[in-house]
Each structure stands twice: as structure tokens, then as C-alpha cells.
Amino acid sequence: MSRRILKRYLSRPEQLKKTRYFKYLEKWIFAPNLWHFNRRTTARAIGIGLFIAFIPIPAHMLLAVLAAIWTRANLPMCISAVWFNNPLTMVPIYFFNYKVGAWLLGSPMSTVGFQVTWQWLRIELLAVWQPFLLGSVIMGTLAGFFGAILTYLLWCLDVYQSWRSRKRKRAVI
Image (cartoon, rainbow, N blue to C red):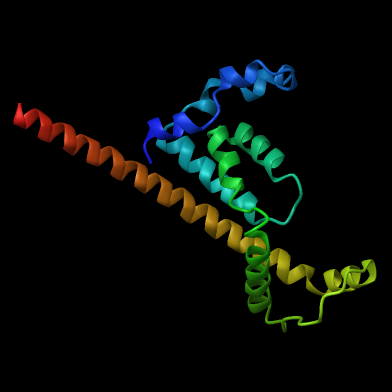
């Protein structure tokens, strides 16, 4: 995806600086490197965002912001990658994570019927937390790694194609 398209659809720091909520965090959030689009920071942001998306914790976006600041990744892309895990994809992602974790640990999959009670949740969570967490970490690591590599390679391919296009245009003139 072209840098121009990304810049057109994502927020700009100048717009966010005007809001009162970000006034106190200006020193950390609005560092120029966090908003610059290049292949390294964007690939790093996609990798971090996808890893966080697969981990079953609350406040994904807040963790993505902190991770982007800490690793100097592109902030808007890191937050956007976290949105891979949304209410429509959450159940299939977490179920697949559990299946992977159960397969890796060699434990049988739990197939107990669902009930909306605290007792059921407590009992079932105690039974499945280890395979679920292991599968989430493994799948998050794989998704982050391959997402970062794919982003980096697609960025390089886009640059190569634009170079070839410019070279052809110069040859015609």
C-alpha cells in the first residue's frame, strides 16, 4: 500500500495535538519518529500490533501505544494492526489459539456446553487457561513475525515497481 494512501486515511499528529486529552502526553506520543512512515517502522508496528491482537488481555490499544513508544514503531499502524482482533474475529482467533495450545500440550479439548454463570466461567477457565495462553503466545508470535516480514517485503516491492515505472517514463521521454 502506498505511503500516500496511508497518510490520507490515518490521523495526523497536528489534529490530535488540538485535543485536550493528549496535552499531557505530547512529549511521548507526538515524537516525530512515531508518525513517520518508512518500511522499518511500519513493519515493526504491524508485527507488534498483530502480536498484541492475539494475546487475550484487555486494553489492546493502550498496550499498542506503549509498545510503539518503547520500540519506536509507527504509532498509527501499530494501533491499526491491533484492530485485527475485533468483535467479529475474536471468537475464531481465540478458539484457534486454544486448539493450537491444546495440540502443543497434548491435552484433550474441552467440549462442555456453554452456560452464562460465574461458576461455569471459573471452572472452565481453570481447565483451559494453559493451552489457551500458550496458543495465544505462539500464534501471536507467528502472526507478528510473518506480518512484519510480509509488510517489509510488500513495501520493498512497491518501491521497486515505482522505480521501474519512473525508469520507463524516462526512457520514453
